[in-house]
Image 1 (cartoon, helix red, strand yellow):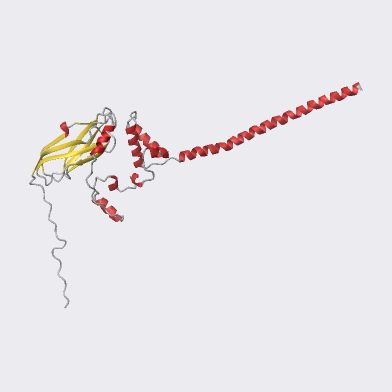
Image 2 (cartoon, rainbow, N blue to C red; image 1 turned 30 degrees about the vertical axis):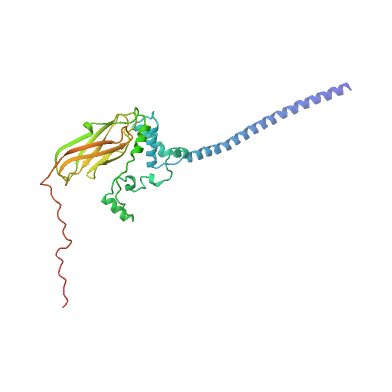
Length: 304
């Protein structure tokens, strides 16, 4: 009986060891399967995450060139620590062309989205620069395209109260400032002969302030005095110029004309002066009188 019990005990022990050895590979296989399943699940989640990131990137608003210029101007004026150099500005423009801006930033900058008026490539030139009349060629082009040439733009109206408020909002110690090379902002032509070509003078200036200087508008005191200028910001320490053309033809006598410059500088506006005397030019060719289209029409044949 004792021998039988020992034999049964040994058999049971051997069976338990065998079962334990069979269970180990099964557990190992189950752990490996679970690990593989986790990897597959993570792999399935990854594309969803990438798609979400891609969707967030695609929510950016792509800007027109006009809108990009507005963003650059607003960023320069709003950030006292802006690098304010041409290389940085060009890199920033490239970044905006490629990535655009999130909708919330566009709304914060108060820039219209999908507004054709901000796209210079789709906007007629007379709508981009309302202070400059159309040339004859531009009028012909508009008529060819079925558009009506616009009436001449009215003289710009200036809101002195708004300019005063804008000037008050800028710290005078940081504001951009004009420094003109001509004494008292005045140029005297002296005595000049009446001519078909306008008398020209270039007023050179330097921005001696701490922020970029932006000219918003310039106009002469009459149609005979026409200023032109760059619309690009003039960075602190940089120089630029305003060209003034005075039409002397038919204006024999003294010259006393002004050019008013409106900008974000302090003070604003700034007034330039031109002076001199126009002498009559006897050699100036007078325009030839208009000739009739056909002064001597051929006689009409008579029927006999």
